[in-house]
View 1: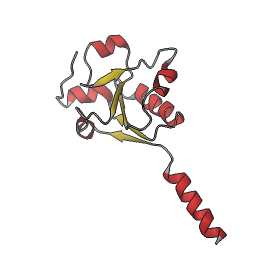
View 2 (view 1 turned 90 degrees about the horizontal axis):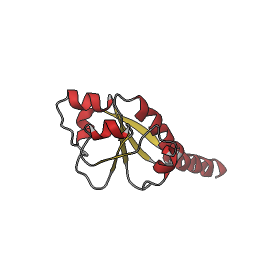
View 3 (view 1 turned 180 degrees about the vertical axis):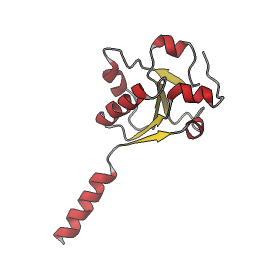
View 4 (view 1 turned 135 degrees about the horizontal axis):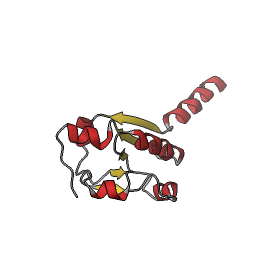
Amino acid sequence: MKSLLFTFVLFIGYSSVAQIQLLGVVDFKKIEGNKNVLIVDVRTPYEYNSGHIQGAINIDYYATDFKTQLSKLDHTLPIYIYCHSGVRSAKAAHTLKDLNFMKIYDLDGGIVAWKKAGYRTVK
């Protein structure tokens, strides 16, 4: 009985661990316009203003209060994150994981891959 209880507790513990999933542009594109997710662009405001994915909010990875801004986001919604090429968003995804966000999706190749696939951005 103890063994069964231990296995159950272990399973519950592992099933609630946050996961970061790397998505290609085709899968990332599927969430565009979805009001039940958060799309976060972690580039600088200048980069964001030069063109971003529709519906994305900007939280600058280099801002001194970056982690604080992320922590204020709705933890119940899936977070879709991207940057220029994928480096900053990968680091930001780990920060989200540390902040106990459960559903984190990172755009593989960033906005560069998005544009290369022919998808549009908005200003």
